[in-house]
Every structure is written in C-alpha cells, then in structure tokens.
Image (cartoon, one colour):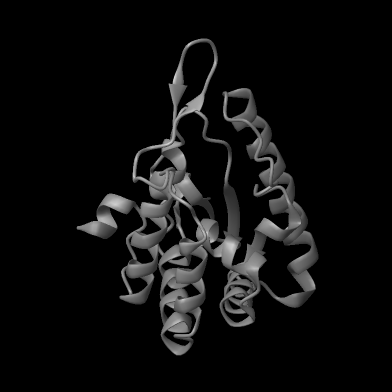
Length: 197
C-alpha cells in the first residue's frame, strides 16, 4: 500500500523554530474495506514508532497529540478528504482552528500521488464553499497585536532584567493572512514565503 507522511503546521510550512514540536500525520492509499482494519493498525504502529524516534532525536511530542500514531491523524486518502470536507462545511470554531494546522501540509517522503491528490481535493472543495473564507478571516481578526492605545509595542517582563514581546503571535497573524489569501486563490504552495511569491 502506498503511503506518505504529512508534515503539518509550522513543519509543513518550513517555519521551524527552536521550540517546534511534532505535527505530522500518515496518509495511505484507499484499500478494500476488508483490509482497512489491518492496514490502519499497521500504519498506527508505524506512526507511534515515528513519534518515539522524533522525540528521541529532540523533537518533543505534540501537546495537542497531532501525531501520526493517533487514530485521528492516520487515515486513508478518502478519510482525509472526508475530514477536510467536514472542517470546511461545518465551520465550527474548533474546525477553523484545525484548518490552520492541517491545511499547511506537505509530503515528507515525496510520494508522487497522494499529497498532490489531497491538495487538489482541498482546492476543489474550497472553491465550492466560499463561505469558509469569511469564517477563517474572522478567526484571524481575533488576535490583538501587542500595542497599547498610543500604538507603542507592549513589552512584558521576562526573566531577570529582560523585557520583550510575543514575536510568535505577530508572525502567526501574518502567516494566517497569507494562508487565507493562498487558499482563496488556489495556491498549493505551503511555505509562507513561497505563498507570498
């Protein structure tokens, strides 16, 4: 059975920082229903092993459990398509948050068929459901930049004499806006810089 590992979120975008954790999933070819249980069991075991190896190499486990050893994140091609369709059409706040991680995906293994087909499915589904975009835009607007009423940057006390502000939050808003425009325009690139280009 053909399979691939999906890198998602910041790993998918290639925006890895020193504090990056694991965000990955497994996609495999659709198999006959009679084989699904065994095939899924095999890939779940592989996903757990992958998570353990990455943790041993210094990539901490994902606190949100977005790892390929979790049953929700180890799916067949059709299973991923159904999941994406549900998040786009249901428009629950949790679904919108998930799209910010899961719609930034790329292949880790370079398998030529599955990831391009999933990207194409996502593109077609988004084109059929344009009301998804205002909901995604609303979620971007919930972020309050670290500015006071006079427009100055709000700094917070850090350890010792150091003071600073949340750079990750500011960058995340830029990433969110770029993702929104890329998805609206059918751009299949995932990295923020690539999407901007």
